[in-house]
Length: 335
Image (cartoon, rainbow, N blue to C red; front, side):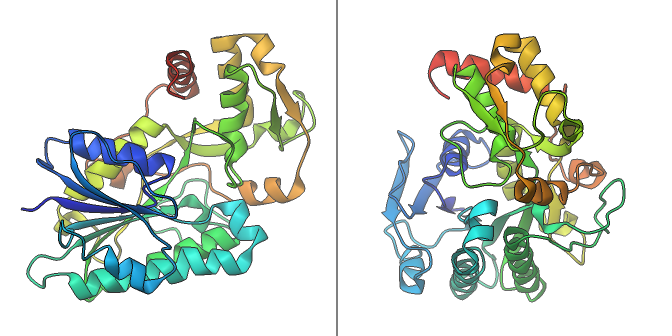
């Protein structure tokens, strides 16, 4: 086995973490990486890698990713995309990046995939594919009806990956991600960015804006979200590569990765336990109806039974251990 892995969106935070996790993965010995993004990614030290600055909306540049000195990858991680608020504010760009470029990458993977050893195509989707009236708990049978451009784009690409898998063109694996908390770095264009921001900035001694509610006493702070830590998410990205194809449901390659439910108030209470009232005082409130509408349309509770049966893992202990870990990362200068 060649163990050549292509990651698009590799310059992003998750792409970088995934690259390092694959290098450390004992089930992927001697891994070689093809890392591509709109800015040139950085490769982990001590690994054979090709890093490429590429416009992933250009089909010729996508095809070039399969013609590097490392050869044709046996696994493709499709991580690139325009985030939720960015897709909502720039509809045309969202279509171009979240659908058209994914289709071009999928089609190129199909053309390069050996018939007797299909390339694994691992696509990162989102709980934003859901909307409208929903059951109390989401199961694999719950129909996805997005209420935002980001969710629509993700669902469209999911359907393509499913169809290419059904036809035997690729070995698709679709991961619907919970909202990941705490994300390091600067705030992103994601509608859910505040979910990390109200922890990240205060732990750095900075003010953060919460677009849900107008004060600490607002009932809007009871808004629940479906969450997972970065560490658990990356573990599940690697696990997705190793799940035998026959273990997935016959009619779909979609897996809602395991998570847990926490409200905005739960987050702030965990922040207070870890860093005190002075940290919570750095969170300012300005209700944003558009943001609140989009986030409120996403389901906050899922049945973890199916993904756990496939070997995926879940966070234990709720928000407090996650906040404590991020506090340690800040102190160590790695967040």
